[in-house]
Amino acid sequence: MPRHSHSSLLLLASSALGSASAFTSPATSTALRRTIAIAPTTTATTTRSMSVLDAFFGKKEFASPCVMGEESIMSPKAHGTSVTPVQKDLRWKCDYETADRICNFNRHYAEHAGYWLTTSFVEDARTVAKEGKEVTFYDSNSGKPLFVAPKGRSMEDFLKESGSHGWPSFRDEEVVWENVRCLGDGESVSVDGTHLGHNLPDSSGNRYCINLVSVAGRPVGGEEE
Image 1 (cartoon, rainbow, N blue to C red):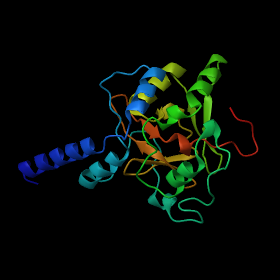
Image 2 (image 1 turned 60 degrees about the vertical axis):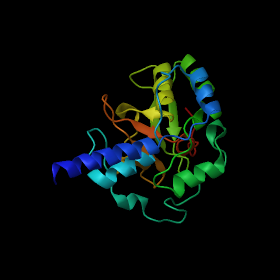
Image 3 (image 1 turned 90 degrees about the vertical axis):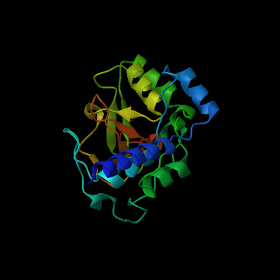
Image 4 (image 1 turned 60 degrees about the horizontal axis):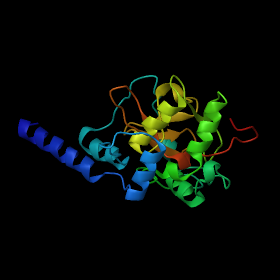
């Protein structure tokens, strides 16, 4: 590829990233900064930007321990990409219709940036942290455990990083790899076909930017943690 063509692609990709800025309202931004201390210059980017970049640079293999999956995981099933709809009584007062759309009939788009701050999640997570416990996040469809956080950091560190990006953000050690896979375009999914979010690596490694509505399920036949 000629040098000028490559430069043009980089410029176009950069422009696409800018145009994919998260749809964060002033009210949401204010609430986010009041709830979690984040740098005022930080902006969140929708997961759609990952797909824009992949149009130019193709599929990826992410660093271990990330477990890669096949596209067949997201093949059509009885209810979108899943066998069943999301659970009716989701945790943290997450909206059922939003969750079902994001989890089962979507491959690229996300709940709006800061949505998780409009739920009871932050308050509940801090209560759990005071008890010296971690939060287990369950598949909103199947009820299988997908993430456990915080690990290797404090709850406040987990909330701060999540706040700076606009969505709950997990690291490798916080992923239950038995039930989670990452596809070549960065899409993070459950083994049962639930769309979770995207892996958007940074200088610290893999970072799984996840919709709260996708991991707000309740464990089937078990007690919540």
